[in-house]
Length: 304
Image (cartoon, rainbow, N blue to C red):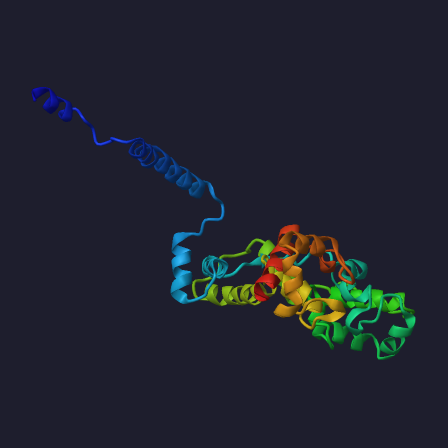
């Protein structure tokens, strides 16, 4: 009787082969599978950000991409300042044409007179140089002001003369305007040493004109710089994509953009950088590749 009691005391909970297999499964296989799942999750690049996903659900249908775009807009710089050299040499008409006007005038899209087409330019040349320059500066038809560019008025006038002369006109290239007499006098006074120390009463009066000159010149010397996709779009791409000319997908037109978006963003980047159809490389601009890609992202985002 004592032998039976001792044998029962040493008997464990696993009494059958089936119980042994289940124990091994839950003790080893399941934990290993769970660990592998955690490792796969941690190393995955497509896992959603917790805060962004929570916000998307709480807002009802807002995607993670929309939330990231909103965050980027909230933290971006309030503004940028571009300091221009007032004494820099102006661009020639050919340089401005190649940088901006070639987008439409090389292929004659959106009703633009094709470069070198005497028949298309003839009636326009008859209206006079001033009329052509006014249209280029302020826009006409599908063409925005300055063709969407950001040049000095004299540079735009030079581009007009370059294109018109290529079609048979004989307009002289506008010269760089001479600096104003007031600016020359101010520069001379700033460079010359003072002959005598002004009295305290006269000092504020003498300093006031100089302060006014600096304040008046500051807005002309500073201009916003297009350093993002929206800026480049408004400067270059708007010429064709705003109205959807020459087969360009219209800005915000989801039906026109979806087949292109389906090809992948790398294909869109390549088309924008190297040109496609009537669109020249980079839309005819000299913008950095990063800005061109940002402009593509901006237009794609507007079509989603």
